[in-house]
Amino acid sequence: MSTIDLPAVSDLLLRYLHLLAFAAAAIGVALADLALLARRDLDAPLLARAHRIVWLSLLALWVSGLLLFTPAGGAPIQMGPKMQAKLLVVVALTINGAMLHRWGFPRLLAAHASGAVEGLALPVALGAVSMTSWLYAAFLGVASPLAPLFGLPGFLLLYALALLLALGLAQFWLGPWLARRWAMQ
Image (cartoon, rainbow, N blue to C red; front, side, top):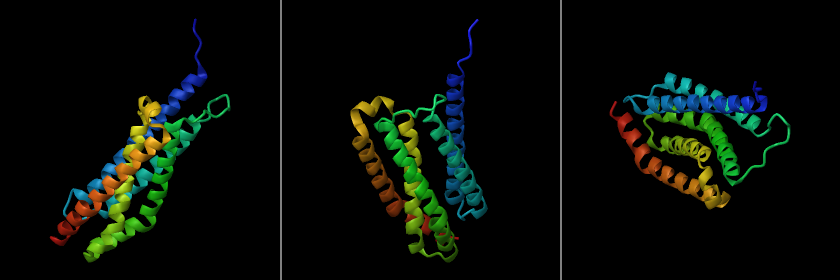
């Protein structure tokens, strides 16, 4: 008769919780994009609901992620370059999310109400950082085979390049597109 390996089962459950929290966050981000892009008009109530889903999911991701680094034995797991990069990206994602909440969404709603194109620059930039950071954190979750090749500098350089591309697209395409779309109401 075999016995149950409780540390392995608890690790499995934490990983599953982490995956479910990421799925919920992805749904929240998709709902926010829907609120912004699916209709001619901004759906502010849907954006507020999406924001709540993303923050609760991010909290669950932080808790489950930190618990994964402290196994049942109590000694923290050593972080390699991939996990160091993931931690830095998630810290950036969290700070960016706070900035979106504090400055981005209010400016987005004000720009939408007034039709002021200039008011879109910050929310669009913060949105680009958010989307890039979520996608990059997910990439890092499966990037183990690249860790020996990239190391921390390589992972951070790739993240910086992804951010530059996303910011460029956001400022030169998404912001003007939203301004034109909302002006046509």
